[in-house]
Image (cartoon, rainbow, N blue to C red):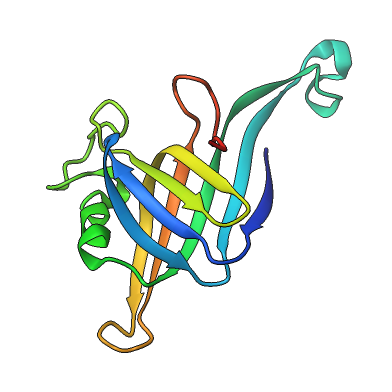
Length: 160
């Protein structure tokens, strides 16, 4: 089973990133905030004590959680966007299937900052990206990231 809820970080939000825990890349400012969907996965544990497979679960096994972060960016730095694009789908450059995300220092640390809130996702990777109207006055760059829990403290995000 999966439970999810969505949250929007409202207002002009600056998005910055690190790659492999180092460097600082300015990805740009959001349009209409950043949309974050938090997803938790769990599995019911069924037992004969509670009616078998058709009964009530005797327990629930937590399988983890992640967040999907959707961004529409303006006022971005193209060189910094290209640095992050080199890690699209967590394969790194060149694309080598089986590359480890965290162990291979390929993860993207993502920080969303606005006047009211800062959210830092230590371990994420780029799922998808699209550019619209490149070279015009209304250039928008869409990026979608998947963030997982921090391996050292179990937190999905921090509020530094």
